[in-house]
Length: 184
Length: 355
Image (cartoon, rainbow over the protein chains, first blue to last red):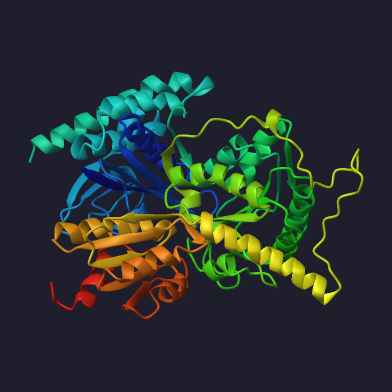
């Protein structure tokens, strides 16, 4: 088993946190893991993306050139990664900020109005977790439970109280993904 | 060994160095390894050790030189353009026979280049880089775990031979995160000041002098011969390499660092297709595993060297193979990281449909 995903969006949308959480959960499951942030010269507010690979075997390159899966949180990221996707790859989109349809016909697409869902849960900042939960449910690189457990590595001190809402968001994303899979 | 933690390579380098007993860091920031000095700046003062951000790379390496003269475990870390600025200091350190560790997280060059991962400083690291006849021991890890482990060996080798040890990584290894488990802390209270250290005459009859200057040619020749004697000993005793699927290999990839980890996947791909491909991965790129590669030249049909440069280690592979078998090369430049599929495709072109 080897699963790779690109997570992309604006700086501040929690792109890196989602990627690190996934990597941490993989590590906790004793799997081989690489997390590679994009480290271009851009400063805050620019586009950000990271590559996460989780595998049963040692990982060769941590660079994902042609993604088999991508979590896309804004329009510029869709423009950038849509052409790179592997055939039959999975695109999980934050529909709230992406007004256009996917042009390619040879990829799987799950559009989630994730920011609206997050707002309904009580905190728009958990948009990333909804999308990550959906990804984890479909591709199963790690157990949803491991993602929830890994939250405690990142939300410490004052942020500890945010763990329940993040857990809820992961679950909500997984639920949406199950509906998506069932509807096929 | 403790618990596995998920860490950036640049941070793991600092943590491992601290655990290995590094007492002083001098350096100047540069991408893609700024997390290393950042980590040192937080941890070294907590431990009562030295962190100093110098005014330049030239100042940094001369501070390292000074600290090394006292026999203290000392380090600087930088990336390609910063390492170029330090070359004069490296040469002085070599002829002064003092121990230190230098990490180079290579980025794309020449010139200011870019901040993407590259391996184009191989010549500079393994052939000296500064002026004069000298070498540093150069370690080239291919995972973050190996990098963390080799930091301990880097300090031990530096002390053992009174030499500069370079840990040669690249921007990718600096920026990516992998699970890593650190070795136990070295007990620094057991460190003794070496006999040769310039820390005051004390009870000794004569004062210690450390210098790279010898104005008489015959005297300087003697110093040079002593250096060469030391390098000979290192070549005999410290060569390290990993051979992957080489036992029955008919073809051998040669690669170091980041490319070597990608090359392992290429080997797996070839093996899945029934092609007997193996990998020779030098861990010390100086001293270079000449004998081991020469031995494999009897066995394989050809070598295929892959690097993120224009073919620098390629020259050492060719010298070792010494014309016995063809040595092919493929590489990407300027910070582009090749994929396993791409390398395997190039390899199959070399087979020319024979398999």
